Length: 214
Image (cartoon, rainbow, N blue to C red; front, top):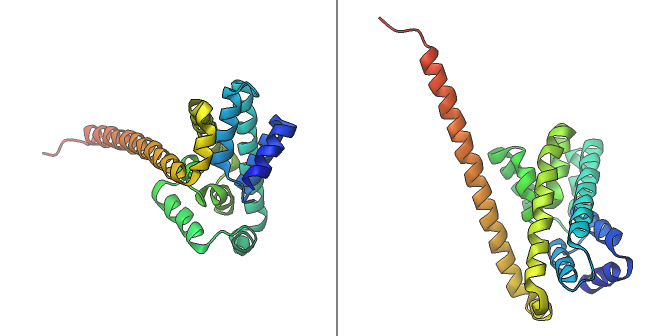
């Protein structure tokens, strides 16, 4: 799958990148992060332009998320077995998505890009849970932009070490997931910190507006 995806990109260019990323997000077994890193390497090698690659990768991610959202809106949660059987997703993936939504709500859409299984089902679950498309896109768009930029930059940074990286992919894959987990942890911290500050401000205003007790 990896070799075929790389050859497809080398032969057809930018639109192939968008098509593959869209398919990977919908649920087709494509190594999305590895593909993004490879595209970053191609930028380093002068085969692709960085800004154009970001745009096409972003478009691919949004198309994939939108198609998944439409599927979720059309068919609902009852068809999740289709995904489980066709694309190799397990019950634990859906449970993971539900758990993330219970904890973070629509913010799960933003960070779901970094979590295999959650990435494929967050859009589907959002639509099936009646999250409005505008609200879904409000989280999906910036999340997708950050996701593609981070992994493209990793590919650019790897540069001439691409062959060594690919040979030790499984080892480096853990490193990438650790990096993604760090990014997620930082984003969650900022989110909750701002949320707590806002709650404190609301409570403070409420207390100030209370009539004095004599």
